Each structure stands twice: as structure tokens, then as C-alpha cells.
Image (cartoon, rainbow, N blue to C red):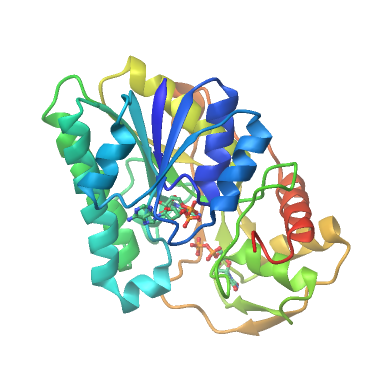
Length: 335
Ligand code: NAD
Ligand code: UDP
């Protein structure tokens, strides 16, 4: 297929693009590089042994999108978004404009070009603090921050768009906590400035770039008091996009799937696993709870297991080992 990957230079987009190229698809990436490096795309092509077409541009620009759709596109994988929860609380309009505005513009240009297949990056954040875990797709959606609100609104926009066009198909993928890197160590997560997320923070402490990890609370009602999340390997997540595409081709309408392993790990368990993988001690200090954090969120991935025939294959040891390889080989990321 001829595929357009928005945000394809980013963490998840780069890993997904490798697998799409390896599967023989023609890939066009549109990315404004606001949170990524063009070097990621060079390495994607090196890993896949094939080239892709890169349009440096913004999904809020019809002109840029028209360039990306030139030559024909059969389906879009829409990952481009801003994703920092804390920043979204400080600059909500920026998030609404970029994420929601960009999605509306993309769907309008898709319509002009007659493209009716869409795979969308949603997030477990749409569940907020779920009443019970593991959480299923039909659980109530209750977002707790502006970033989450953008994801929820984008899901609803896509559902309405699908409902209005009998032939259209969309797949909403609710990612839990993607971690890890390509096993080659050539591409991985490269956060700008101080990482917000746990895994890149731990990796930078192991490397000596940061002195200690601040554990955001140890008084949660979890096995050891620290927050529990469902971490999944980014290569498994990338693979889910191929399965979602296949599903979209065969099934009109809008499907929604949790992507996680179904198994939760606490912050302390993550630290312990990373110490084993890296052979380094991770210094920790216990801090207070982070605003907006939930105590425990894990996926019930059975729908994706059964309907998409997708299952997370990598365990926590692989997630840590691959993160560590990427971090060691690229101590300052793509710089
Ligand atoms: P990322 O920041 O590494 O990648 C996003 C990419 O989109 C970046 O390359 C950025 O430059 C690009 N981008 C942003 N706004 C754009 C715009 N207006 N026009 C063109 N390009 C733009 O983030 P990621 O971790 O790869 O996340 C990809 C998607 O997955 C996002 O939609 C994110 O919300 C979602 N998601 C991520 C996580 C996670 O923990 N990483 C979890 C759940 C959902
Ligand atoms: N966390 C932490 N210290 C950090 C970053 C994260 O203790 O520097 C904790 C956080 O409170 C949560 C877990 O690690 O319990 C995962 O956080 P992350 O930001 O990676 O994912 P999210 O909260 O978005 O699920």
C-alpha cells in the first residue's frame, strides 16, 4: 500500500516506519520535526534497506499535506501530536490547536484526495483513573488533563467521520506505555530536555546523565506503593499498526483497541529490572505524587489479541535491554 505516516520521524513513528518498509509498503512521512530529528528517518531507511519519501511539513497546513498526498495515498497512519501532559496543562490552546486542529485539517485533505482509511494513535490516558483494572475498551472515558482531552476529542471526530461515510474505516489504537527501542540500537526514544516519562529517565540515570530518579509517590494502593503501568515494547506497538492496517482494509467502520501486555509493573519493579539489564545502580529519591497521575492502569488487550491477531511478544527484560543498548550507543540521542 501507499501509506502516509504523520509524525513518522518521532519515537513510535520511526519504529513503525521500519516495519512498514520491511513489509514492502511505500511510505511517505510528513513531520514538522518539532519533537524529532531527520536523522531518525535516515536510520529508518538504513535499517529497512529501502527509502521513504519525507515531506517536512505540518499537518495543520493543507499545502504541506497536499504535497504529501501527491502521487496517491491508500491509507494514513496519524501519529503527529504534542504529547507532554504537564506542558498541555500550561499551554492548553497550543495542544488543542496542534492536535485537534491538525487532525481536522488532515481529515479534510484526506477527503479531497478520496482517502478513507485511517489508523490513529490514541492513548490509555482517555481512561483516566479506571474503576477497575485491567481496563477494557468499553470502560468509561474520563480524561484528567488537556492532552488527554485532545485524544478523546480526536477519537470522537474520527468516529463521527466514519459514521458519515459508509465506506470509511478507522482504527483507534489506545497505546498503554510504550518503551524500548529497535534491537539494533540505531533508533529509539530521544526526549528533548528532561524526560517526562519513566523509562527514558531511568536510562539517563543509569548512564550518569542524571543524578537520581525522583519516584513520584510511594503511598499509592499498589503492591509497593509506587505507580503501576502496562509497559509494552515499541516494536510490538509498531507491529500492531500493520495489523490495524490489515483490519482497516477489510472492515469499514471504526474499531478501537487497547495495546498493552495486560501485565502491570510498579516504578520500583521497573528500576529493579533496569538495574539488571544495565548492571548499573539507579539512584532513587522518593518524592510526592505527580499531579494528575493515577495509581494503576493496565490494559485488557483481549480484543486486539483476538480481532487483530496481535499480541505483545517482548518481556520486560527485552524492553530494558533494548532501551539500554540505544541509550549507550547514543548517549545524547540523535545529536
Ligand atoms: P513523538 O513526539 O516522538 O512523535 C510525534 C511526532 O509528531 C514528532 O516527530 C513531531 O515532530 C511530530 N509532530 C507534532 N506535531 C506535528 C504537526 N503539527 N505537524 C507535523 N508533525 C508534527 O511522540 P511519540 O511518542 O512517537 O508519539 C506518537 C503518537 O502516539 C502521538 O500521537 C502520541 O500522543 C501518541 N501516544 C504516545 C505515547 C507515548 O508514551 N509515547 C502513549 C500514548 C499515545
Ligand atoms: N514516574 C516517576 N518518576 C519519573 C517519571 C515517572 O516515578 O520521573 C512514574 C509515574 O508517576 C508513573 C510511572 O512512573 O507512575 C509512569 O509514568 P510515565 O510518565 O512514564 O507514564 P504515564 O504516567 O503517562 O502513564
